[in-house]
Image (tube, rainbow, N blue to C red; front, side, top):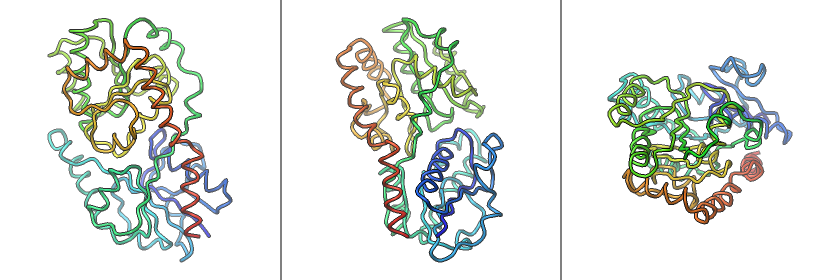
Length: 351
């Protein structure tokens, strides 16, 4: 039996890309004839990490096609054969982009439409969160849907961090952090607004690290104008940085603040928990499902309420320890061994 995992585009450092690579490794180590295929493969990935789609060939009736459903894919999934398992990672609603870039909004709309048209194909679906499960059910998917979270290689986060960043920012300032691509659905403006109120009214000795790809200029430019309008200082966009630099920003952070309005899972929540950073997050879309009762959920994006909670968490050591302990407990669910077991149980069921 062959297992062909297929993703339209395989990117280095991307949460879905890392998930694909981890699943491929798990299947191979379990003795399966598994391969990872993509139409577009990031040149930065090690040679042999994946093969081009053109080399996959047609699968037999007993083989498994594991399709990573993330963006539009201009091929007929039926033509590949095999038993079809889809892993759905969600698609950003086009409304978040309609005021910034029509082409991006149209691409999101096309991806959502394709997700709906594929509803009769899979025999089994994997979703990262209960929020994604509801998306598929609302789209008319009638197959079995199992929640299998994204695999996060936590051992990678224990390597050395950038020493210069650590030395520069590991001081008595309160360091806020949010990690994620700087795009409209992440609502960076709400993080900035909360930080500005905290800086102006509670503690001027603070910084905000907005770590993530900042190449979507229509939105980034608007954020820069907003920062100037508020008169807030120490808002830092590191931009495209090395993994060791990302680790350093996590290690100097005191609070992780997420105001994102749309997430299919939100891997940075797990990263923050791994670094024992108290998490405050807006209770929107998949975030409550991912946190599973850990961290602190915010009912709305009120900057004053959020800033006051940040202040209490930062100053109250007992509270901070209790939050971190709850996060540590939740993180056990996302261990490699636990998710590996879920994956292999389903594969054995299909074999």
